[in-house]
Amino acid sequence: MGGTTFSANEIAQQRRNRLIGIGLMCCAVGLFAVLDTTAKYLSVEMAILQIAWARYTGAFVLTLFVSNPITQPNLLRTGNLKLQILRAVLLVASTVLNFMALRYMQLDEVLSIIFTFPFIVAIAAGPLLGEWIGWRRWSAICFGFAGVLVITRPGFGAVHPAALFSLAATICYGIYAVLTRIVSRVDSNQTSLFYNNFIGALLVLPVIPFVWQAPADWTVALLLVATGILGSLGHFCLIAGHRLAPASVLSPFIYTQLIWVVILGYVVFDHVPNGWTIAGATMVIGSGLYLLYRERQVGKSTTSESVVEGPLE
Image 1 (cartoon, rainbow, N blue to C red):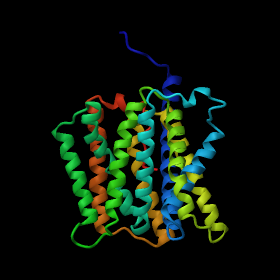
Image 2 (cartoon, helix red, strand yellow; image 1 turned 60 degrees about the vertical axis):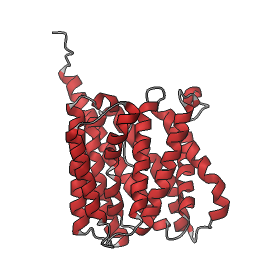
Image 3 (cartoon, rainbow, N blue to C red; image 1 turned 180 degrees about the horizontal axis):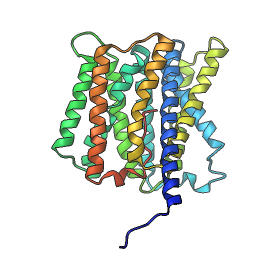
Image 4 (cartoon, rainbow, N blue to C red; image 1 turned 45 degrees about the vertical axis):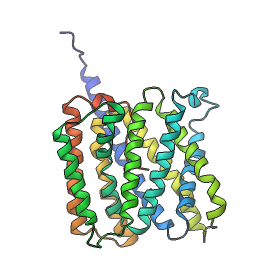
């Protein structure tokens, strides 16, 4: 008694929404995988900051057609401007560092390290959100970082030192994700996305005159434009998916991005994951899935349901 009852049609609609949400999440991570592949390809042709500028400027211009201060006067209204600026700075830093790592490392290696961002979120959530974790999740975090050590094998000269760029990018993104939880209490996802793209484009713009290099041909120019399109479409699918299904349902499907980057890495760069990367990625993904499970067990998933969390892009 007192519980909410649903009709058969409502239950069927909820299932359809969850399936569509899962499909949108898989589409989002697929687009982000193509974005990483494009950024890696372009990094041979031009400066990393130029690629980052194209990614954020393109995304900002494209999102203006869907969400802008003219059609939505409240879009610029934020309950915490300082946090929005700090979030955007961290996201730009993570993007630039990620692109720097991609220049020297294989797609699957970089992504496997980035998949540790839920561990950073779990650690930072204690002092910033008061969400302290127990020994089980600390064990999962240690196991996940052991997986990163398997991938990078420090001291063996197997992986480029650029792995440090990837680790730094992951730390920046993890803190960004925690701040996103905080700011989501006062701002909408659309407002946060607008500030991400606007401040991101603004931050990188001053350095463009110093690093600008004209695209060698139309293919390179189109790929440069594509970075903004891919980023915008990816985040659109991410937001749309979270409107249809809970974050706890969608989060595990983030890891399907590894399938995309393995395929794209082989097709575009002729890269094949080595045994160490596969073993380390398995450890990282396994511990990440366990963290998601524990999050649901202790009832903290209600905190993250209203927040759009996804891959670093």
